[in-house]
Length: 101
Image 1 (tube, rainbow, N blue to C red):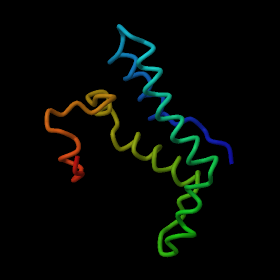
Image 2: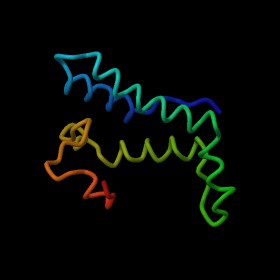
Image 3: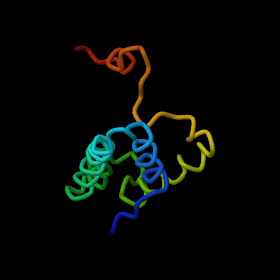
Image 4: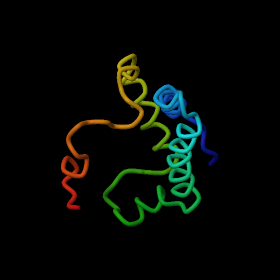
């Protein structure tokens, strides 16, 4: 299965370019982080391995992940334009995610 770039991914790259319009290389760097992580998950078959490890879970193959991204884009609709490309909440993200530093 070949990955088809999703609309939400295109929107993310566009938003990064707006957020970093004075430093386009930064936008490409951050989008590169995302695509590198995504490509590793695909290349190493991590998405499909989820079902092998957790038998009770539904299919998590590439098609499912692309469907999730497509549905997220549809659900967000025009609200996506109000979101930042990179979360910039003043509360430390590690506290909100329950991580300890």
